[in-house]
Amino acid sequence: MMTRSSSRLHSFIKLNCNFITNSVRIPLSSSRFTPHSTSLPSLLHSNSFAYNGDRPLLSRYQKVTKLDDAFNLFDEMIQRKPLPSLIKFNQLLNAVAKMKHFSSCLHLFKQMCVTGVPVSEYSMNIAIRCCCQMSRTNDGFALLGCCFRRALVPDVFTFSTLLDGLICEDRIIEAERLFKKLIKHRLCEPNVVTYNTMIKGLCKFGNNDIAIGLLRLMDERGCKPNTVVYNTVIDSLCKDKMIEDAFKLCNEMVFAKGIQPDVITYNSLIHGLCNLCRWDEVSKLLKEMEEDVRISPDLQTFNILVDAFCKEGMVDEAEAVIDIMVERGVVPNIVTYNSLIDGYCLRGEMTKARSLFDSLTSKGLVPNVVTYNSLLNGYCKSLKIEEAMHMFHEITRKGLKPDIVSYSTMLQGLFRVGRCGEARKLFDEMRSQGLIPDECTYRIILDGLCNNHQVEDVLSLFHLVGDSKLNYDIQVYNILIDGMSKCGKLDIARDLFQYLTVKGLQPNVRTYTVMVSGLCGEGLLKEANHLFRKMGESGCPPDGVTYNVLLQGYLKKQNYDDVKMLLQC
DNA sequence: ATAGGGTTAG
Image 1 (cartoon, rainbow, N blue to C red):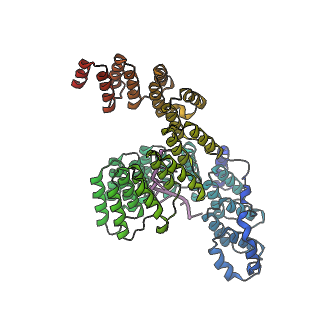
Image 2 (cartoon, rainbow, N blue to C red):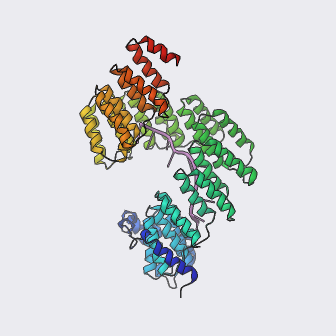
Image 3 (cartoon, rainbow, N blue to C red):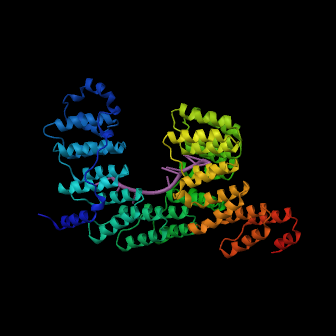
């Protein structure tokens, strides 16, 4: 017999057949005969296989900290007669999932199914969550189909989890479709978590307005938004530099809804203000935070401040923040010091950066790849390429793996000192490590080749990339137009500039400026001036740099009348 | 049980 809700479910699953793959693949790594199990003998020699009553078992499954323990416990559990309660199995599954051994957790779940241990909605939800956390949401849907055949009815937890999975995989269209379907087919009533998940997805794709609309809608539908929901939107607005809207929403939350902000609300707002260098307001917010007895700045608050000061070159202020946090008993972590190291590096204070780096161990902190990358960048910018290379090799020696940023930084450094051959070798090494260059790597290489006058290589690399996303990156064109001009290939630069229109790419101020600069370099002042005038009409008015470039062009040609004109307008 | 910040680096 099919209940009303289960028949709805059936049609839901049919409708979503595109979500569903044939079966759930359990990867080999989920096998228990993996390196994880190597310490099995120690457990064998202990009394773990002896039946030792319910008490020790009960206390053990609650604190499973190792995967081996979990598997051994599971073996014991399925052999017991009568079987331990489903709750215990679920707690074990949950423990394994919490340890982030998702495929192992799925493996156990599958074992439960095949050995006839009853499974509940709760077990299914854990298993589905594992799929989603492994970015295999499709498998989650497949699992839902399997469970449906076992008469398990998905609930709001199931759907919230699947919705989150889709959003984590950037499948926003499908997420929206699922969300609408939940409501339309009354598969479950979305709760505050479901709404927040959908709102997060909308924000992630820049749809802040729609997200706010959904926030209003949930309220109308009788689901009161809480601090988390408001924080989700406030943070997104701050990230998109819409700080006024963020404050508006925050005020609404406090004064109209009576919901108090928490430290996360403050951190989002402070971060947003820092990004806009609105320091007065930052300190106002900090003061407000101090006055609120419920809230005090936490590690993240301080890290935001340290990082913001460092990025602005205000390293002394950053150091002062660290002193204050220490005074207050907030312990700086590696993120704190990474920002400070980066601050020193950006100012070329490599001795300071290095000595801070060397002192990390005594602070009980372990440098990570980010730490090294800052140092690499610092040494490269100071043209201390040998030091940089030394650090680069140290990454591997310390058991870390250089990432795409490490390689890109080194490439930039090598190009800067004209060591193109070594750059090429490093690039090949990077590829052999399975690292895929991203748009930033690509820009660095193109820029490096241009600056080293390797015109042919630049163009062949550009054509090699073909119709990829990188070919639609305006910054790439800026580099190429500038590079070609400087290599004396103004015709190519011009062609590229023309080509933008064909591509449907919008030139920005920098594009125009490099083109103006290129034309001035060849003494083509009329054409440069024409382009300069065109900028305003194209909705992209020239900035100080463009102005200077043109001015210098006139000065070089001793066109003093034009200089006068330019200075007057 | 399912949700919000941080993530610092090219």
